Image: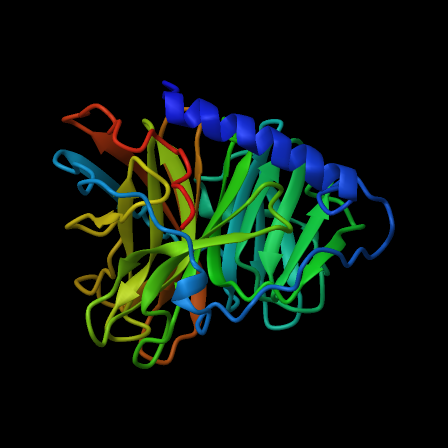
Length: 350
């Protein structure tokens, strides 16, 4: 990926910042104490005063002509489990795919060598991470895994680990998706910001950390939903130098579809694609995902396709059950990335 001059400058500043954080102990992800509580307590993001938020990047909206994000349902059945599930998180390590998914009691950890087959997931741990079943996002940062959920950040050296550490409390980010940019070393989270009518957030909020745990800087939201509409439960993927945010979006909960927002800059406004990645299959009588689909999590497969797991609703009262979808992300026009702010470069704070 090309580096702009502004990106190099931001990378230099980042290196200094990381050194300061590590020297103070605030960014030390390698601590071995059972519970580590450090760093600043974050704010309630719905009420954070706008005057304290740095200026966002300026420039024209990204070009999205020719962009397509298409997912299909494997046949004959794409339901993964019989039980009700919550907030799946997917990851791949050493050729094995892992799935963390909530149940009515505890989060479970599963593994699969053939993850596109819904019946291939094998239970590894039925009491995983904590005694709460809702988690938001899972990423790997420099060989260490970070899980966001329950207003905490959890870290561990391996996915099957039974010694996850609570790293921070009361982050305030709701239903977030996390993305680690290896070039800048920054962790970006996109989350539900503000309150929409009924469910989810009014905007897609954005915050950045040098280590994914502490020292968060909040930037302006990158998308605002129309009146009455809610948006939330995000997952993030980078494809062809673009960042794709996938999340729930529909005015009628739980009749969500999995919509897509894209940008070639992590800080400026994202553009919503015209077509969702996955929509309810209301034409399929009796399907367990024919009313609504939400809480997406996706991972890239070896053949270049993507696996997406999401909760499907059979009717307006649920229950939510996990479903499999397989698809592609394509950019037929492939315009050059914008150079006005420098791709992935941080805007100047006000």
